[in-house]
Amino acid sequence: ADWTREEKGQLSLLCPSVLVCCAWVNGEAEIVNAKAGSSVTLNSGKITKANQTLWTYGAEKPSFLIAKVSSSQGSFWAQPQFKERLNLDRETGDLTISKLSLNDTGVYERQRIGTYISSKQFKLEVYSPLSPPSVNVEKSYSGECQVECSVKNSRNLTLTWFKGNDWLQRMSSSDSAGLSLALNLNQRETHKYFCEARNPLENMTARFHPNEICLKNGEQHLVPQ
Image (cartoon, rainbow, N blue to C red):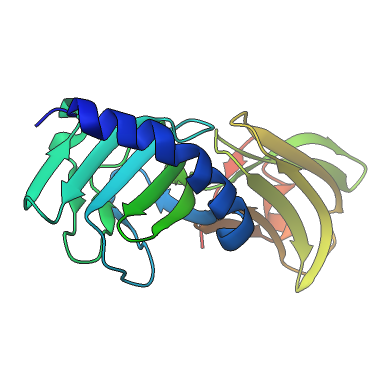
């Protein structure tokens, strides 16, 4: 069902109070990370009696209504473009989103409207599956070589070089551009080296001995963990 005139007026009057309440009571939005193609449930916390539960969404601010459930009428409504992927628990108010895509990244807000108004926000980050890092020889000279570790596009990515259990260099990027990190090696090194790619969801590692990769100048070396 569509919004009634009464519901629209009720929401416009309540929203400013909810925002103030949320900033004071609930603090910052809860961070939720998920992988593209999977499902995620936004747990709305302690169950309180409510006449209506509303979920809004936005890339930066949750201003677009995507779902609502009315306990008095026992009805559920969702935006058509979301309907096949949303499930709203009528008892808890928890929202489950299936078949996640990168476009689902954004801020979600749950509002319970009853005797009291409660609100909770979630910042959902959806990530593509992390690609394994690759290690390539860039230069080779006089028993030494320069190798470069790189990984394809991923947001909030960190690349780290390790020598055994000791970390040597690290580089991070918050955008979705590819990332690469170079390292100079001695071909006589006996320690194993690792290049680790990590985002908030998962990590992948390439490992090798310098005397193995430096002798194969120009070849790609990839051994994921």
